[in-house]
Image (cartoon, rainbow, N blue to C red; front, top):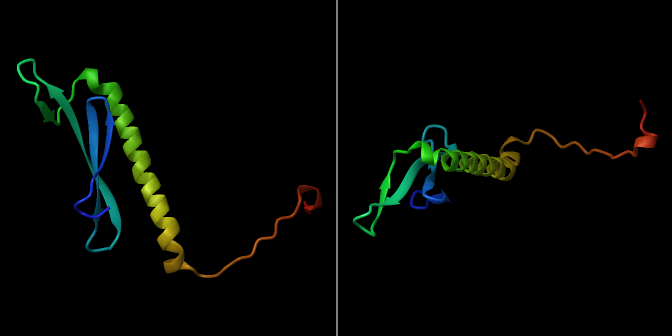
Length: 105
């Protein structure tokens, strides 16, 4: 995801925009997110957007927050799995799998 790409997650009228960012000092990536609510007014068919929520939005907002945090965690985990081994390999350990009945206690 570059600066021009955003990830959107929606639960009904409640959504979030997730952006991947780069910390210029450390070179690490992180995610920022912005929550939004869409609605229509009785006098217009045009969709409008707001960053305020009501108690009617609470359940959907909670689900969006959970999905957002899961997305960020998954992205961090996949980044770590891909980039960290090449940067931080100290040594390799070969692990032999021993059947439980042959293990020494």
